[in-house]
Length: 436
Length: 78
Ligand SMILES: NC(=O)c1ccc[n+]([C@@H]2O[C@H](COP(=O)([O-])OP(=O)(O)OC[C@H]3O[C@@H](n4cnc5c(N)ncnc54)[C@H](O)[C@@H]3O)[C@@H](O)[C@H]2O)c1
Image: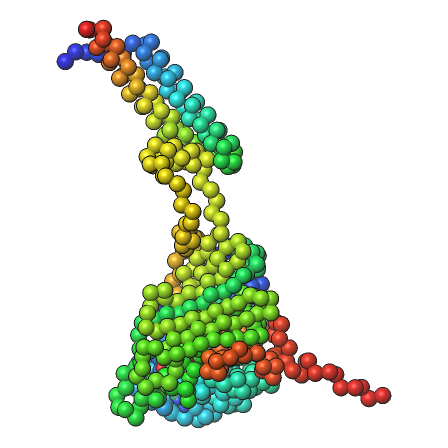
């Protein structure tokens, strides 16, 4: 198995950036790599709880990282255990996660189970003294998200959330450009995720339907909101440095009427106090437009999924070429009877430029995993990472609530934490009078 | 087939004509920069286009001359 470490220098090279200083400013979570030279000979002993598709994806990353040793895995479904053992044959196998947490050889756990289980697993892991990487969404309910955040506040352990865009060079570069004012003040963000598949997984026997296709049932998941929107709405707070206070939306089941309980067609608007809006749209019966986030500034647009940015005004062609072009037009074009009074405002044909000089090769998952390994070794927390994950989760949940209730939802004060323009209720409460 | 003799005078005329065409192309570039209000650095950054345009002008001028002297020759023969 090929094991390869990535140094901060290599990472910057990958991003096509020579000077990393400004980059570090736009990516506080990247500070996880700050001590990567000193930790060269150390190893993080990790365990993965939930070795389904995402758990195995992480296992594949971990076994390639020389600073990591996968010591244990846990799953309560035999095929998932077998899949994991193919990747890491020597790991100890557990079927009950609490037993795994008793293993003193485990420094940190990665939780990749369905999200309704995250809260109890994160809390138990912290209680057992383990560092935690919890896949997104942090939870299915606001209470669980807040409980996870509080558990994090009450421990000195590391918590990572599976919001890999935070470690994706394209996104980091995009945010850096936004902070430098390259695209001007942001006027709106449009996010969408279109697919054309039923999102189902094959089930060997009917009683396993809910266990395997948990994404489709409200008991376990909020469907597209917790699975897809969660990634994209996180970009709003990162790019705007502001959290929305209101949301509205509409959701329906228009195509995959196969017994599922979650929507297959959703549209949400997040309203920021500044007047800017961010939308999230998703349909899983048409994939023409794919997945993208369009960050629209007064002077340019960034589409980080494509890894591109577009200036509003393209610099004009050289004078001599314009002259030749005009002469050519004069010679070859027939004279119209009258100019058109209306020209359709179709999308700009501007091809744009790559954010990091080339077509994107991968998302930030590999770097997120490497950063987690580093953080487990050093025990150093990564600033703002959990807060970004917390709000990605709560905004997805509230978006779902807005659709369910068919009304405009105000972000509830009791679920605010101290981050950006939000203040935790305790911080808002008037100070108790001092004893005199 | 007859041997063709290109006189020194003809060569000189052609060289001057070519230089004149390049000068005209440079003039066009200056005119275009002023007209479209683009950067003066295009005086050298667009030099390849200027040379190409100079060659095109020279070729067009040569075609014009050939047609003109052809017609004159024809008239004289009549
Ligand atoms: N960050 C990303 O891009 C990304 C991508 C896909 C999934 N995810 C997240 O990863 C998590 C898992 O998704 P998935 O697609 O791998 O699901 P999955 O169904 O493929 O895997 C979940 C696994 O958890 C196991 N499990 C369930 N209950 C358990 C328990 N009590 N103890 C131990 N194991 C248990 C299941 O048997 C299964 O093997 C979800 O939170 C999902 O949102 C994140």
